[in-house]
Length: 181
Image (cartoon, rainbow, N blue to C red; front, side, top):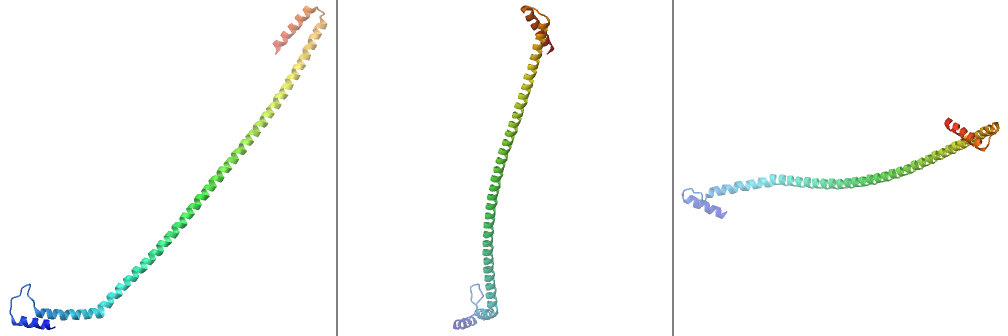
């Protein structure tokens, strides 16, 4: 304060022209008083409001950080669950694919076995039919041979010829039978 009063006295004693570097002690005095009053008003009403707003903002930021950490943890948990579900689905798909391949292989083997059995049955039936036809043909040939023998014998009996005539007769008869068939 003493400095302030001495500055006031000096400025009153001298009537100097005002320059940007000159000191006006009256102005300094009133500036200090207004500054003090302003600090007192701010200390009383402004500072608590400012502190309250800063504390609220700190609390809000802390709350948002906690919420973000919780959300991050929840997202990580859900991601892990999704990964496990995806792995489980892949494993199930592999199992289904393996079982489908197994079923297809068994079905293929069954179809092949059934086809072989059917082929064997068809082949056996064809063999039986061929055998029956062969027997029929043999019987037919025997019948014809008997008929031929009887016919040849009757011709021989009817014409009592010599050996050379008998041969010609049989050959002629065989030639006529060959023309019929």
